[in-house]
Length: 59
Ligand code: SF4
Image (tube, rainbow, N blue to C red; front, top):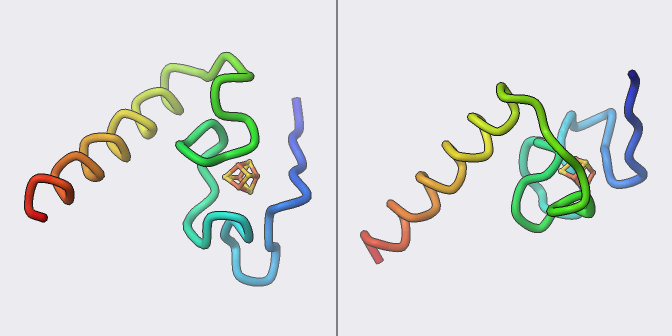
């Protein structure tokens, strides 16, 4: 299955909406909570959440 998102910037290879790497389903993504993700993608999302939590802790 292929996927295309209107928010994906092919020139910059990142999400135009979030200004970060495209990880479908990540927090703030238009697909958040709307799709079932693969185990690999779920792992990447978990890593993003962990990084965000660590940043919050540091203040
Ligand atoms: S992170 Fe989500 S909203 Fe952004 S380009 Fe990727 S799929 Fe689209």
